[in-house]
Amino acid sequence: MRDESSGNLIQCPYCGLADCLHLLAIIDLTFPEWWAGYASKDERYYQFYTVIEDAFRQLLRKGVRECPMTHPKLAELWGYVLEDHFPKRRARQKRNDNDVSLDPGLLNTLIIELFKNAGAAAQHGVDDWGAPGTCSAMTSLHAENPQAVFDAALLQLRQLLTSVPT
Image 1: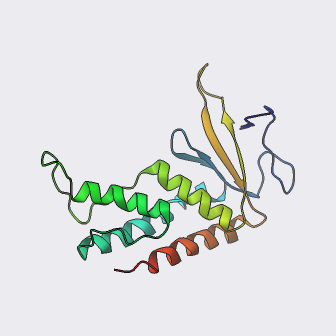
Image 2: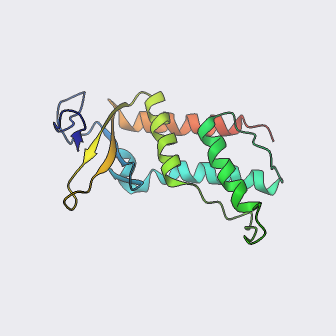
């Protein structure tokens, strides 16, 4: 991953290495994927998806149609879920309340925000390792203690969702 402006390899702000134990995540913003770091191991990042999915599923079961979210990205994710479950066009079929689909790109930007709020250092760059003429916008996140930052970000998300009035 290279810095978009300088073209230099992005390195850890804590130890100066490109790949180290401080790496929390490398997130591809073009093709919403997680490439490396503590958060990508054992598919830990799915914990964020599951927490939101469970909260949204509860709201759907309660019949909540108005947006109870105060966080803008959660509100936008909820809006997409509502569109799926209560379509304005008759041609689309209403979904089952157990079926919650989250926009992966929007979810990734929310998680990056949560990581940064929890103390991660974010660096933005490009990955041009693919075929000629192709590249991805990437965000690299490092933390002195990746597990602590991951746990704090997940807790922050849970707090945002438990403060939602129903």
